[in-house]
Image (cartoon, helix red, strand yellow):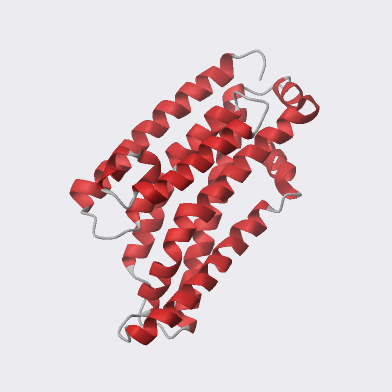
Length: 239
């Protein structure tokens, strides 16, 4: 718990969690504009549908991965400055615990951002006149996206732990983000795991034959990279 508090304090000046709350709100403003536009041409569209179509792609395809990338890069940069890694690793704490704590911080930011989006999406929809309860598909998509993003996070961790410069992590992250927006429009998205989060919000996917394989593949990639990186982190003398 003390390690977690320490990691959160390091990020306090960066206002990460404030960004996690504000970012979804900015995206939903675009969703409101889209809903207002499409409502004129398609009166039967509901606020639930209009907001989702107008906001989900930008949120999942750009805002969410960019925020994750920012957190991972800044965590690594903080430790790289002033020999932070050496100071951290001389503490009487197992390296696995240090690694897991840092990863947990990223997961907390991801969970907070997804939760903020869900809450703000619901409030915005009701303000626009939505009826009934939030579609169950929205809850499921949040869970699916959380799982599908794990390989992306693990890869960023893998890269940031192997370089004192943020350029590599930033470059690879941006390539994944930009290419996923193109690949998801084709039939080749199945062969690009980094495009899975975007694919999950496109709709029309079969739970058994498409969504489940996405989650299984994402989990396998995550587990492979995560444990490989943690093993290497544990045995390296210099970070």
